[in-house]
Picture (tube, one colour):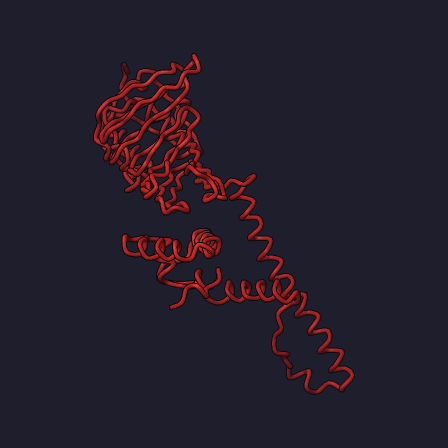
Length: 361
């Protein structure tokens, strides 16, 4: 198959290309990256096609058919010829019995209606595409954002894999390849599997509090409430920030390190942990190790938009060790209810914790 002849709509319909975008393997990465290096002029077409596959959530084994391609081809033809695509004329049984002058009038009206129909279809497609573009790009930046209770896995233009946790946002420059450094800006939580480049091009993750510098590794970053937590799973990263005296501060991490930086105290804490406990959310699992109810409340608000109210102030300091399904907070509530003899009541987006004991601590 000669991919050099492919246009955007051809790539979007190609099963091998879709599989690479949605679930890249070492083999497919090797093929497409090698192909791109030999066909650099095709990079804009490839990037647009990748964007379409991800935006439309096209299934790996089910390339798009029917209406989408019809409208897409119509748009392309209209753009190339500056006129609407032509279609065979249709004749109804009623039309066959019309006088010649009435038939001509009827056909003219039908053609006019067809033109309006196609114009409306194309306008709708272009408007939808434009609105999606406005949503994802802002002053030359591409933005990917998840809602409460929604996660997303996608690939950056360099094939770095990112899993964005609930209620999080990642931003990067739309003209990715025109920059010497690969940079992204994160608000919330994400797991990165960074592709190492032969030219050792840096990869930077910016949060409000600090900067994570990477060459090729797997790590998790959580940036919420004025704190940034970085857990290194594989490889090596370097944290950078500017202290109150405007002096650069750097800290290197090795696998198993957890570093927490507090914006309020302008200080680091560092400890050795099991990274799997901190990245289990990628497998739809929340893992807690001596986690206070107060911290659990913050997680529920950050990830699900649930506001936790403690009827008994002492509950904030209770600690829970265990796990629960990430996509079902009710499972966590059931476990806490049984273990700590609680009543947990949900009212809209509010969750009330109260003890059943007569003399609560």
